[in-house]
Amino acid sequence: MLHNLPDELWLEIFDMAVDDSSLFEPTLPTAFSEASWFKSLYGDWSLRTAQEEVNSAQRKSYATKKAIMNTCRNWRRLGYEFYYRFLFFSNPRNIQRLCALMDTTKDLGKWTRRLHVTRYFATGGASSETIQNSLVAVIRHCPKLEIFITNWPLSISFSAIANALCTYSVETLRVLQINIPTLSLPKLIYMLQCLPKLEVLHVEFEGAPPEYLPLGAAGDLELNLPCLQHLAIRGPFQDFVEQAIAWRLPSLRLLSLDFINYREDFPDIIEFLTEHGQELTFLDLNCIPPLEVSSILDLCPMLETFTFNPDWRLGGWEHHPFLESHLVNQPHANIKTIGLHHLMYAFGVGYAATYNKVDPFVTQSIRRQNDVNFAALNKRNFPRLERIRVLNPTLLTDLEKNNGPSQACFERWERWSRQCQKNNVRLEDCTGAPLGTLPEVDEEEEDDESVVGEGELHLSTLRELLLECRKMNAEREQETFSPALHMIYAGATQG
Image (cartoon, rainbow, N blue to C red; front, side, top):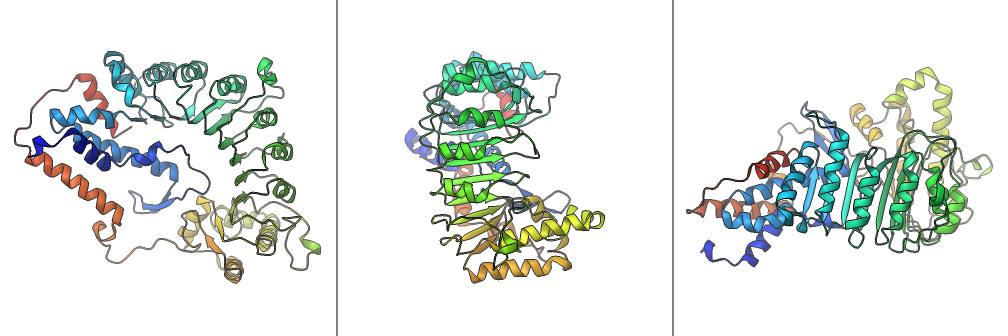
């Protein structure tokens, strides 16, 4: 009976079993992508970021695909489409292996829609230049590439990779995430000029910014990116922002600016938002020096989600009847969700608990600013406010280790909770759970199957079906895979 099933039915079964459809959506994690708790090998609770969840999902999907490919000749024939429709690497040597395989089997890349290389440490004697040149060759074999992600610096061969994307992926590329040196900005501008179909762009700049960055002719280009909806920039990106002020970004709705620890030579965010802020619905600002929040919110009337650093000294609270900082010039009509970065000093845990002993004046000053900024997150200023989320995973980890806030900061914890309850606003942590919901160890840990959700049960059933089909296939053909294919398989679960 199994031998008589049409290919179309097998393809439907395999498609549900590999469970990778979400990996092809034109999106990238944001500050609001939820983290999750897990137990480390040492038995401690740790947080897994949304990006780590995506990486884990890719590894699990690969494991299912390998099971399909290893079952029989017919399943292997059908499984190629699933095995190669996304490529995920955390081991750089596997890029070379895949490159060699694609050079000999030309049509493997025709199924590839997503290519993701995580940050790695070079091993096995392969140089970064060799690995990156192999990556260029892989791009050449993937004419339908929609998503290209690298989490390590493209230092040596950025020009070659940019040329490959602009040659082979102009009409298909929708999502681009790259890490490049600050000095490569001119090359980035030229590349973006050739990718008008981009919908999501995430750029991380590495290296200290020079006092003067010569852009040459790239500085005169006024790019038109009509499809770009989500722009995320990280690192010393002041020159990028100053150039982008003059670009045409009519579809931009989500903007994330993460300055990391840089404190000097800030770009003119106000001028950028004057040009591009009118239609934004999501604005994520993560930096240490304060920005003019009230002016920013005036420039972004359509915002529904806004994040900032409540450690900022915003002023105005000294003369306010409710002792709240000046966040808005007028009530913002559309913001429903507010995210809070940093807050490391608010609850007296982790590093802040130690620093308080060294410099209590600074600690108390930051906590006072936290209080007046949080007090401003109310329905008077934000009539449609529904949710406040504390975004810092390090803070949540420190709270878990301390089993909650310190005794000296517990009053702040309760006061903020009462304020949210009074305004009918949900106060969350970075997992999406109510702030204060920490993982607990049960005396008798339940079997994993007892807490599996409906979706997991559905996928488990599909995987059991695949295993049962394998058992029932009495005439399984024994065959030898090519050495190159064996090498790809061997590295898939490791990236």
